[in-house]
Image (cartoon, rainbow, N blue to C red; front, side, top):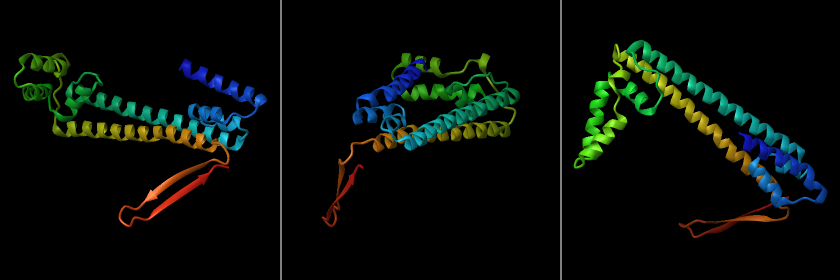
Length: 212
């Protein structure tokens, strides 16, 4: 976090300092890739800069919000599991998977032993290592009161995964915002050429975009 703050301070310093010596578009593009909007501001395009700064703020807010919802679903799921199965309050993947798919930790541990024998049929030591790493001890065990309780827990976990996917989708905005911001600061009067060929008809074409 401290490194990110220092980078932002450095960028804003460049924005205020470099205009005294003329506009440097490669620098503007680099700035846009680091902090969308900073390169636009440096180039004097304040309107675009505001849009990109705003988009970045919305993306960060969206990620924080959805991540908070995700953690809340996990927290509620574990509280529910503790109430209806006696499960411990643990959120590692093995434990959550066991709670979601097995009525009790003994059933889960039996599956782990089967997996170990299947994965390492000729290596007893590897089997033991795998079992030790993935099995759940009785001290952390659970036993669901009913399949309905286990299904309710599974639904809570499914909702948490959907929210996590939403978080990843919002995070993609980080990349998009940087690409668009850098695109706007590209050098003037330079073109991007895209050649298109239809392999069936043999027809060729070219798309040209000139930065203004």
